[in-house]
Image 1 (spheres, rainbow, N blue to C red):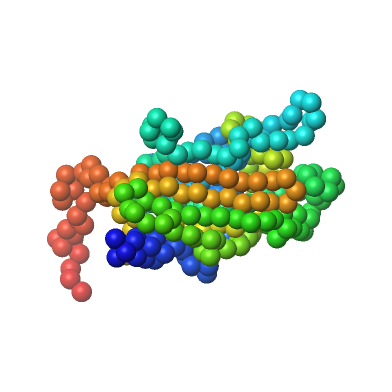
Image 2: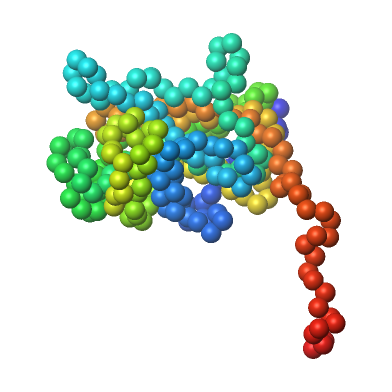
Length: 265
């Protein structure tokens, strides 16, 4: 069993995107920007098509307490694991699907109010300062991965969870955004100058080492500045990637023969 556990660990670690790595032409900072726009969109969910990045999210369940007026979390943790009756509530991904895991994240836009200091963020420099402070003044964090059927300890990925920043960018908050009202600081639909920072890890980005089939459980989260906490459990079922389906008959896309019109060189 020790050999199987070592093989599993090596498989996972080999697929982690390096700190300075590039996957499909994009860096961690690029994926962070895309993730931030995705999470503010009207469809912040993994659709399951081949080639898609599986972006995860944290425990976004804030609301205003009617007695105190303070934003509090409705759910103690985001539970996307099997329920106590054994019903699967996770995601179905492919062996080649890359998974972006935001363990702790901070994003602020110009004109927002800093939830801790109470002042308006008047510039991107203000947003950068607030994001960096949120991350660096946070507390403990965790990120583990285990596979069903393997009698192994969960893999501790904490050493691979590193700090990243995005370039400043234009954030579009959809009028139909499902999650914007559930953020710690709700944001109105509009387009904003935005900056974001994160403690994250990106899994399954190797061209040679892929996730093997089976059911996995990812647990991640941490403590941020103030009373902020992220705690999430995400199960996912990995299925074989058989490639894109062929919808054209064999030979339909062979290069045309122009030898009768163009002489050889």
